[in-house]
Length: 463
Image: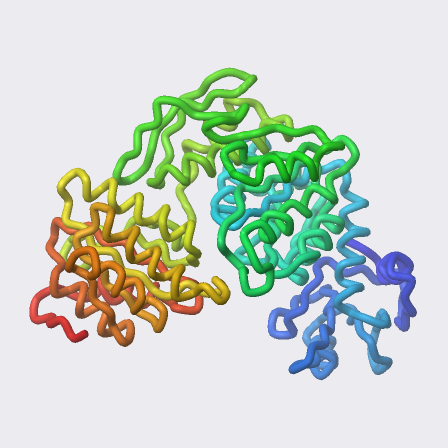
């Protein structure tokens, strides 16, 4: 990868090492995950200081440590290790500028778009080993640099997800990643505590275009109300739009219980796509991925094959089965008002076919001072949809239950996961369709696991 000398020069840092030509193969900030040949970055925060683990990291095989303090062992010494991590990643990206990098952000669906792109790129490159994509949720000021530092010579495409919870964060990330193609999937009511309004979210998401390379392409959702803002922010770049009103669009959309099919239309032609995940919002995600892939020079045939092969993302409308045979859609990865409504639409479409439906919801986080009203809106939306039962968990979800029951009966508020499992089991039949969703901190996958291992026999509503 890099020699200690090269890294120190890139960072304008002091190097103390037995051999400046020693090389490191990987960069990590986790002392519990040290492999031989790693560079360990000792981050320091208000409540932690990884400098306490430098000696252990070196003992476990790290070739050196990036630190703010002098001490024993090979060390690259800087003023701020977090800033240095970003600078090192920016330098590494500059050494691999010939590899196309697609940056992805958005309030909803960015991980699905990233994974769709990974599937498409794997087809185009001849194998997933030639594609480097963000793993898990490593999309912040620590995760994005680590993702970029994972680029290797054999990679033919890089897909970097960028998240944020305050202004300036994506601006910082995009200047590290230096994307050739940058996607803003949408802007919604997420991170309102820090950003104040959906308009603020849109502005913060649009920062991704500031880091585009000179001949880069901005991918913009033509259906989003903030499309004009993003087009203004990307005015000096090439622009491609997607959506039902975009250059890359869909027709003959057929929404199915377990997926969707549609005709993908774009300047390059037309292709038939069959997605293995349900929901119109996933059709829109597929259009975003297609537009980005086409902008990166991938053929329409490879786009089609990659989308058709995509198997979905864990915790995002993932099909599972309850112990009694009922169908479950596990959408527990995260939630905000827009993604909640999209999930309700999916379940309601199934309910419209006559299938008994049970919606299980946990609180939404980071919705700001309007939390009560946001949860009421979800309750009203569910009550006005083809939903038979609402089972809710969390302090704020009580307002969703109140709003639902104000329009019609069928909603139950539960004190905890166990109570929610029992409440669902009380109305569950083998023919039922259940959808479970909530913000990450609610750990609603616990409810899914309980339903997978619980029969309805003997269960009693307890809340």
